[in-house]
Image (cartoon, rainbow, N blue to C red; front, side):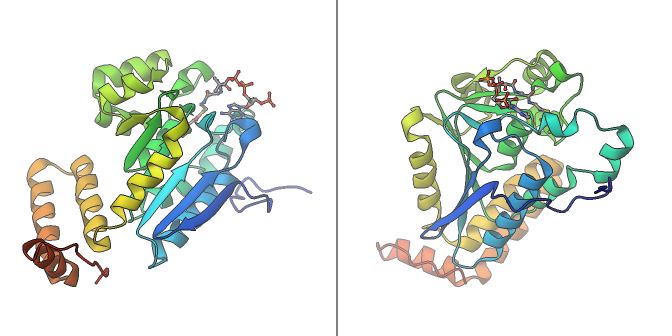
Length: 268
Ligand code: CAA
């Protein structure tokens, strides 16, 4: 059978991600353990589909994205790319699927352990709160393969940790330890390896007790900090803040505070 270079649709029915729910949290686990969760186009397709399904599911407020203890993800699938030509890479545009992950509106908590490299680091940076185990090794080693990051690494890493550190990581291909990543502002918290998933779930569950509309708009506003100049960003934030006064959750949240009780958010 001949395959077209334009083909981006899934070719197998293998489950390359696992999905489950825990209350208002949707949990997605990458499931290619033999290749350290290398991100091939089929996996990214399944991931985008599931993320969109959770994003549209009104009973889900927060998403957790996890890898395994050994690897969050060791990058884009090298075997899948090694012999491709420029035109093949350009025409199939494998990173277009990543745009779908970028567009997810609900907050995503990453549960990271072991290797988060290349596309794995880039996928991690698509998430909003990053819980990393103390065994995490994070980097953009594409330079060792004769290429460079292609799924946002040069932009997001530089914004996250600054030019000097990003240049060091991207141009030498060295891995950051969990503590270095925390100090550089690349991850949110570092926890002992045995707790990395439970801690991420705990953080997600705590977030899921908040008003879901406020969560979404707050994520949207923080992401604008990366995309806009300060004055536009401030204006954008102010608009979203005022918009939240059209929700029942804002009335409930503020009244509950004044009445010294816990708020009951409804997502309205
Ligand atoms: N793609 C495909 N397969 C991969 C992979 C990847 N990115 N990373 C690891 N694997 C496979 C290995 O080939 C190996 O398979 P076999 O058992 O069939 O040989 C298996 O996973 C286990 O890996 P190792 O035996 O190498 O395990 P290790 O503990 O000795 O080393 C590692 C772990 C340091 C992560 C090493 O596997 C490695 O360097 N991986 C590649 C990391 C990398 O370069 N990532 C960037 C990819 S390009 C990219 O991501 C572009 C982009 O911008 C999106």
